[in-house]
Length: 455
Image (tube, rainbow, N blue to C red; front, top):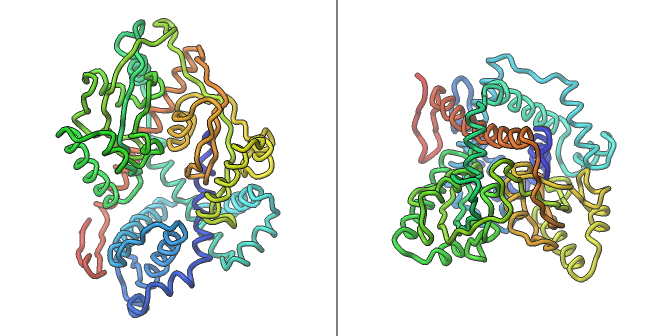
């Protein structure tokens, strides 16, 4: 799916909050009497503010209910409470920082966001409000969530995104890495990989857990374990069932760090270190190389993909399970001879619906990682299984691929965008860590009774 303005992520977050809020009463009951007894206790002190047991119980209840809806395992309650509390602390620190910096969001901006959310659901604002309230989401709470998301977005823009710079030297290095050390003799690379998800804005605990698991798997792979078996049993990528086999790809279609690793590997070797990508950790094994056809040192080509999709959003009257099942049913009907474009016009919930879901020709880096990874693993005409991204669930079909010559400026623009996005994600993670370290935080929840940060 082509990237849109930051509004898309904000809208997705607010919409997700709405469906979770609707589930609060039932989910909170699942916490039992222990949660009720802690309701009015302070579970964390964050600078000059506190988080109460009641606030924590409500958030934990929402997440527990969502995991149950997804039929995903729910962690032990004490572990889940600790993880959620860490997330709440990070959120509270950012809200405080925004307030200290004088960052505000006026009513007009909130109203505009709410109107765009209503339009995305093909409703008037009054209809949208009525639907939310019918689902048990107070309009005042929904507006407050919208204001918070917009505020944190402005904070990140000021503190991180606006300070990211990409030099011409970095752009040149990026393009060179994609073309390989000998552009006139560019080679396609055949990799197998194991992917473990860990977004850069995830909690430190989640990132450390993913890295620990990845390190253990890397050690096994380097020790001679069957790489295909490790991928099938552990990889979180869509190609896990194929043993993580990426097939032959041009360097343009691979992350720069993976291309760099290939220069140091012989066929059959596993890269000795983990590769950090924006959405997780990669373990890669070079299977083989082969000469590319039709490459040119003077004008490196971009592999573009003509793709269409059907998008169902989650949190807009549709649960995770319902969206997945509906797309699975649609996929079966298309495979049985149904018209993809007709289904897209009828069901897809984005601007491409009127074009039968056609997103046109997409260059590397123009889509969110989960979408691009799934798209790159499809053959022409093939339809994916339901794929989850920040926007919802997608069915993706590749119509065709082409080598686009493109101008030098186009190549540089794409490279600059990819580098800037990667640097921004890393900078945001570093900034969050520094902000957390400079804040006074004292946990009072059992098992986390400690303090850290500024004195």
